[in-house]
Image 1 (cartoon, one colour):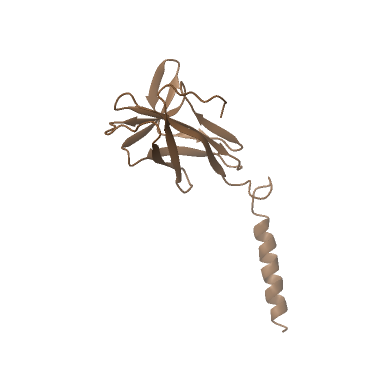
Image 2: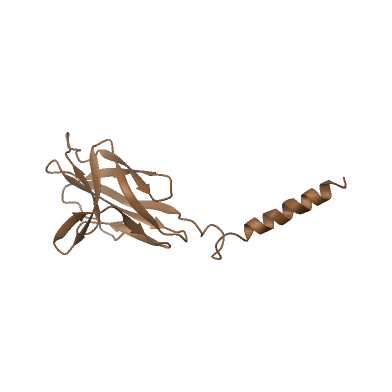
Length: 152
């Protein structure tokens, strides 16, 4: 019994020391905590299509969306500035913020679609982030003219 007390005391001291190693923002806020909402793809009218969604980060650490993969084919990440659209290597998902991929702004770009997904189908994608496990997302295919009625 006498040895159990020092071992228990050491274990308790170690646990307290480890608890002090986290960020000072409270439990669970030192890492990224991602959720995805508002995902959709307008029905493609050519062999190219866009994908839209919002990635919310409730955590205390920003991350980067580094790539997107899909069984449907090649997917790249684009941003729009003024009238110009360009592929980017990554997009930031800020701590306690969100990354909105929307028409006229940053978005996913699908190329070489064959066959083209039809309204009512679902396209599965995997979002890849810096330092986090990938996130699987289903994008319902909406009418080509679809626009969300509320902001994401």
